[in-house]
Length: 66
Image (cartoon, rainbow, N blue to C red; front, side, top):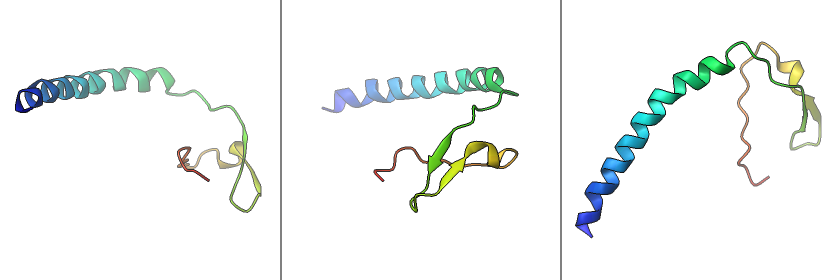
């Protein structure tokens, strides 16, 4: 099983390096574009439009089970 550790480590290192090269290109492609307006509900059922947060930093967690 130890023989598998080195190829996995090399693969992981190459993937990380590729992501660091591609990320600036992807960020440059979306710079200056606006997000379409949409509505989400909070845990209390209150609706929030994304446009009301324009100009502010918004952290959204889409992976929550709730």
